[in-house]
Image 1 (spheres, rainbow, N blue to C red):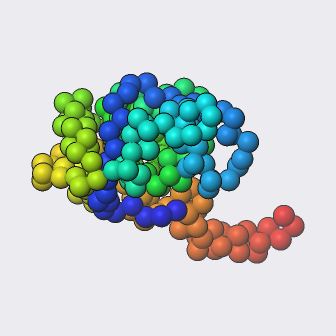
Image 2 (cartoon, helix red, strand yellow; image 1 turned 45 degrees about the vertical axis):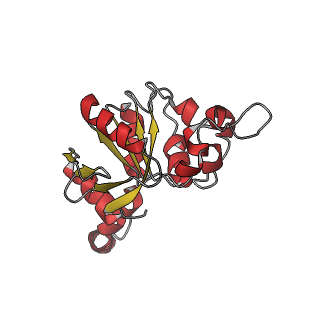
Length: 201
């Protein structure tokens, strides 16, 4: 998993509440177990028309936001079914951070497991960040996980909370497998001792 330390990039405004996982990645794209390739279907029903052409009014289709790395959204982001394909699609598109007033619990947890930083901030702060994101590609936002701050293009900074263990995992690029491998020396020592003391096992 890629490490997350400091991210400076384009932030896209998506001022919708209750964006559920089916909106993020519709059910017809859930046939794969690969984490790559889903970015092209992110927000499929909003990004594309019935004939498959791009909807020019959707924010991620606008030239200023095609390289978006930060998404500023409305309340209750990631609600609905507990599909891990949702953070897979977000990450594959290139978005590493989602900022919203609140998140659905399962989606929130899945983000950390897939190298995405979900940041919950009060509505009044999200409103400021949303307005900053509306400035387009020239207004780049900075997210610093080490200092736990989000800074607007104008230099206004806001602090956010994050669980220390999850912060450690993101900073070090550790998913569940990586966490296990951190303990590989201890695991090897235990297995060696077990083989000696219980050779019949």
